[in-house]
Image (cartoon, rainbow, N blue to C red; front, side, top):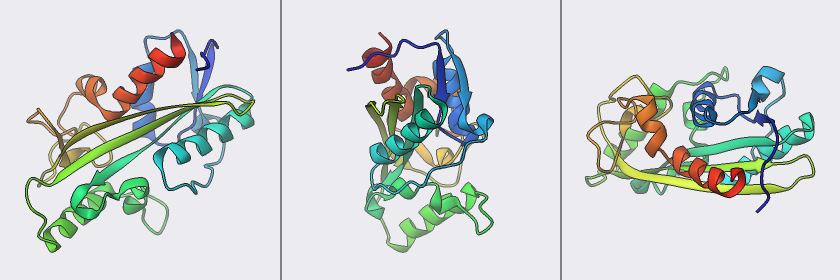
Length: 203
């Protein structure tokens, strides 16, 4: 395991929700953090069929472009009754022809497909996250996390992002969309992966 001992870190994401959540997780560390979006770097093509594979692509692209260590996240929702779709295509389900994203449309699509197949209740699902920490010499460390729960309807809450309003984690009455961001940052799939990152690479 390679340890991170730098003072600057590039976040390899253009997703505003992810950036906000990752910045919150990084807040306790004395780091200068900047995103590829702020640097005007392009989004690399994600050609892998796993979260870890796509996270690696993004982290390596940012590390090579900036000459700095880079942290990327690839994550998504897997719904058991939909054969783990949308999975690595989570963002694609929300993408419109003009390139913008409509997650209300995407959440509705998930529910309509569950209804069409008469999927039994509870409609089990999980959020998965892979974090890749890459260096300019192409060394990569990977950390994964997941949180299980179920799909609920109608959509609930406006505090999260993505599919959060239809995902209720096990052991809680609130969806991620209703949950305070600080509370969510303690139990989410990203938080679990981040804890492994801190214990493995930051200590």
